[in-house]
Image (tube, rainbow, N blue to C red; front, side):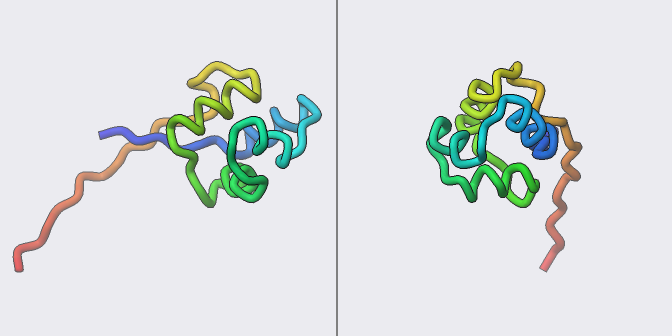
Length: 79
């Protein structure tokens, strides 16, 4: 099963290229400035709808700011 990881550093670089502050991006996306900073530091992953809004605000294609990560299957131990 695949899951995705947000490319925070790439998002921050793009935001800076556009001359936007984290506060401005947050206002345009509908999240707080601290949420934008957490996404950029990769300490928090945006929800999918928020991710799409981030891509729109940063003017990048929707697959640009995420990378697939293989998720290991979970096994339950017998009790």
